Length: 446
Image (tube, rainbow, N blue to C red; front, side, top):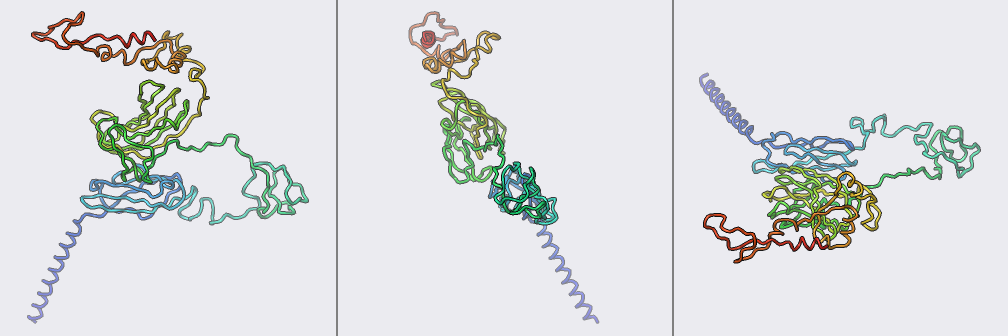
């Protein structure tokens, strides 16, 4: 009996130790970092949006997530965050979405299959909404009503002349009410809308997924290259920037027509504020800079949109992405840039004849003088001056009236007339500024 009790006691001790070890292992396992998860399959309909959420981990545990889709024509990714992204169905079909999650030195690649259904699809019955079976039942009356009232004779002459709106087109010998859809299709030309909607074909398009930069290049000191960290797939990145205006540019001068209005959209990313700008040069004048769109990025992808009408007499057009603020020289990312014609062109001809009503004729009765700023190079150009005279009754010199132009000449030794020396205590100048009005006098002579 004593031996039995001893053996039982030893057995209980062994069991207790085993449970203790198992408990420690379970505690250790529970303390391990959980792996992120993503639904393996999901369904959306065309034009429907849904949010994909990374589960099983907190957002604070995720350092960075890169979202990608293998078919951007069927599915659009937007609102990309560390723990979620928004998907929108564009075209029916299957699409793969990949989320690369970085967490404390570990990287997890999560994949989900998105089935994009056509509008009206019922996911429960797997048939279009409003029907009870995958195939629609045949009815006595055809489901498609001809858009044009037929005024023709069928190929096989019927015994009964069809009415203005026949219930069904006869096969060979028409009956009063055919039970099935006729096999013979009327040859009458269908009615076509007199105002078809035009297809929006981008004048400039850049998604860079094929790794081709096209005509895009660096502006200033920026070096442009292909990057995998795009808004959707690949994108362009500008590195080595030493000034805010250094960025990514494309020449669009030969792709546009004067008087046309174009819309712009692009996705960009940087640490500060992004600006989409058009550098414009008219005639032989100086380059001016037109802001198309500006938006704060702060490291996130943002969409920049705007429009611009091409002026008459333009000789240079450069579209580029830059940042604001002289100290912002961090890398700039550009993706999905589009430039689309949105308004028709004006007639070609003499620039001085367009538009029919001039600015001076419209506003001189109110303001008197209607003017603009010009440079000597513009005043020396006959085409430029013809246009300026047709629109304005007053001009002001541009750079020629600035202090660095008037006081840009210096002399040594001899004091110029009217110069007062020794304004400050025990100080003597060695170089003296001299008024130079040569450019202004030249402009007056013109």
